[in-house]
Image (cartoon, rainbow, N blue to C red; front, side, top):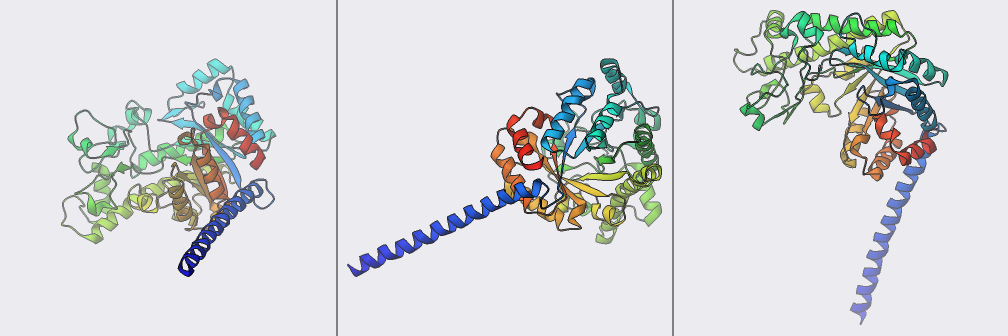
Length: 412
């Protein structure tokens, strides 16, 4: 009988302990959510809310002033502070360019009867919303007939150690083992590429002097799955930057023939550093030139959120961009529907530098049928000191009344 009583008593203690822990965890979660509301309404933080607007948006934002008006209305209602408006993609201009193909801009004006980019910037400014010109830089998508390629030749494209671009080709046996991005990328080590893209950025700033920022996307080497941690492992994976001109410039600079010389950790590290410096040179060039035109312009850059991949695979030495003032802040593209992974990535990025120079990008397009995951990710961000949240993309807000109400409640 005593044993039975002790067993019941012990079970009661275990049950009570488990229930206490559950209640504690629930309280912590509830506190986090309540903190999130306070965090977003401006009472405890200046966290900014931003949204990316693509040129292929289903909302056709730039094709009528009415669509722009609806956008601004939604942004005001949801408490959106920053609009990242795509104006340059695949070496095509969605503004009046004298440098590259501006047929998309001409199509917009033909439909809207006006320059809706200018109209949007003015309307947003009246509501206190900042507009950032979003540029896809080194990726030219699958556009093999871009102005830059026709003008400067195919040597402007980066290739892997097998001489292939990141564009998939038919019946390539290696594609059975690797997933390439299936896009063409420009070589950042090419000085003419850096000059061309810097001129595009300057043209945009001069065309729209009321812009608040310049947002640099695809400012990296191509990624591949599975990825390798540095060029030491090119015998087992794919890496880029192996165009003839880039290899020759590296050899002239370092005395190293990275393709033919014997294995050396020192040589491989120098080659990886060279490619990181290539990307950094492009960031620096654009930043210095646009700030020379408008010192108040904010330069932001998107990055891959994995610290290892961004440093050893895509060669984005983004902490140096912040340290040297080339970028005012970065946006980590933390796109996942795995809440724990989302938190790991966000925390690892924030830990590297001043959190006020960090914003976290959320992939709402992945969470259309998982609203609870989005809210949980937002709650996680509430406990982090990042300066902003950017949602990809506006289409996922425009078509989601529940999300709009949530943002209105927590951000407005």
